[in-house]
Length: 629
Image 1 (tube, helix red, strand yellow):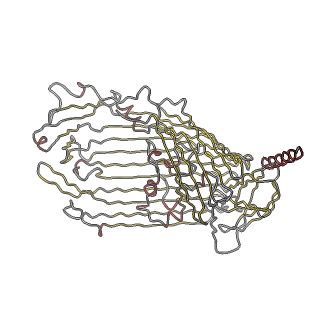
Image 2: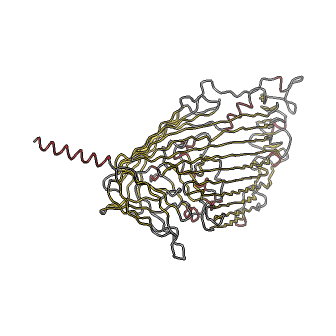
Image 3: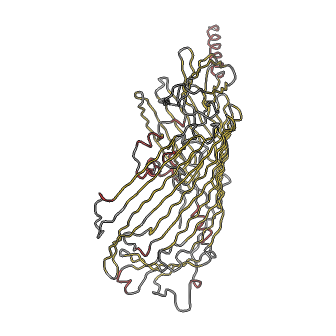
């Protein structure tokens, strides 16, 4: 009996020693010039057992939980490179490899697309996500090439937050994509939903990866035209309006120098949307029907140059510009042409990125992003605004405003691999911005009438007007810091846990720490994964509420509301706007940043090769949500 107990103890000790002696095999793949080679299938095999993975956008790969022994490593032929094979030995320490591929002698380039595992423990490869690569984006018709609008229905409205959809392009949070449609390499929704690296949950953001520079010239050009010749006639239009939209879009990438260590990417798009709005209103002179031109012209351009100082040090510099010009906006329906606005939104960006492989197990990437915005809004008519409920809106739009912004974003992320751990930590600063708002809106005042007869009788029920300098300058600063550890406890069990801190101006946030965590377990059949996760995510106020706090303080803008005023002179004799108390916007003393708790449970099952079923239960609870009273 004692011998059996001793034997079992020795077996358990042997198995425990084998489990904890397993190591990590990682490496970096480059071409003959030292540039990264992404999306290449890598495999290690021994005694009929095979592990596979795919190199990421940095050309890196890794295998976790590898038992000691001798293995055969193979890199499949792809992207015009020959296959690569070598023997490796996994001992007690982590194995780091540097692999340089050779160009295939075949004249015609053959691209072999690797197929990822059907079910994976990695949170970034969960099956409850929307993923579209470049080939899918080009083959699926997207209205007006607006991928953000096409993918937004797949987001959870409860996870979007106060500031709207979060767009992350190449790791930097942005207002728009910045590049044209053909320069997009991949789009994902719900990638790593409980990552501490991002402020929003997976279903509240869109992750976009743009195409990298290539050592060979590649390019595409697209032209789209849509005409109203086949449109049905609008019931309220006296004559059928002529409308036409033209989209010019393209991108090109290739080597910028003979040494092939420098590459470039140029992309651009021009959208000319010549639309018309139909006015159908009832004025004192009778029914008014009119077609009003409301053109929208959008121009975007991006240029990026990347240079590899060494296989471990890559630097890129990118410039983006977006210029949107609109005319006669808000016109249509009950709004007459005289009450429209002309608007321009221009954004210029400069992006610097440096990726350094300090050691085979340590990677650092820093991104500096400078943004300058210019956005004037002008009324087409300078006159008091007249609103007659249910009949017409005329006079001036009273929307005159100029918004300027100078913003700096900083991202610094460190990734470290050690045995069973994959640790990431860093700093995200999405906003270090100085903003200036010159608000001259509603200076002529707005009259509201309950009916057409009240308008003809000069009996408004309310009058609003603004006065004062109108210029507000304020800083909007936001920052975040995070740390996360992904641990491979066993071959079929992975746990990830982390914590994030977020802070922004105007709100007390000394204790705004958001813990995140997830777990994934794969069954013995290798076809079923059960994963779950939970996390606390802090929202943000955005610029408009902070601008209101600075404008409507009783000095910068005086805003008054009068009930049953006179017309056309709303004020009593001897009184003006300064004779009445002003509307104020203040922050509740106990106000804090809203946050929500997200949690989910997912079961993934490979039915047949190439077909996986994922069933997910998701929940969210919002706490201290923003409201205006």
